[in-house]
Image (tube, rainbow, N blue to C red):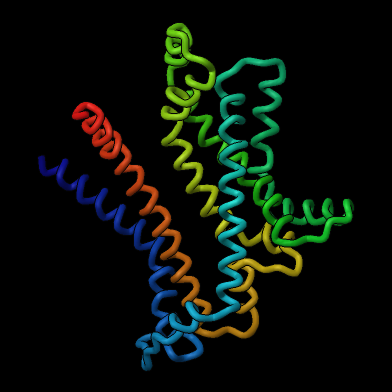
Length: 273
């Protein structure tokens, strides 16, 4: 019994140390965002919270935020559509070139993002396309769509195909099977893949650096300010970016948790009327 308790304590300590290792840098960034001095020093001598007001009222920051969010939203939607049907082709159906498709669809994941970004930039230049935030969407999709496909494909491997066959035997059309069976069964993976896609695109620096051209995203601006012209506005935006990412994840989990309650309330209403 004592040995079992000791093992549990060791696991808890290991978990706490892992969390500390992961999140202490974020805590340091938070302290830097409220320090009035140019560089972070402990103990902090003068506090200043005005940088948060400047970040929220700055036109430059709003433009950067708009560009980053626009790219992330479009990449999420497009990658989910492509990844959903790509995952079905990856995991659910047998066809002639399926093995080759499975290898090629995952290949971009293993390329270093800097190499992939440079290759895409050279490709755009060869085609005579001027890099903008729109070309950054294409670059993000090349890297993120395979990840989305893989996440949904893992779930697709897990559900029983006989459920679709049973629905087909009962006279359901392909659209009804997709709507009532396939999509609900894959929805947890679609939700996870959507979160991954948004956050990976939102915080992507290497691909954006090579493919946005004269436009700029928030990670690019943060890097440029770190190299030259540093101010506490940089860690302030870092803290706000992390907070926004956490809010997106929390909102997604809340919506996911509320779906069963909404469905049950709808059933109760239908039974009552």
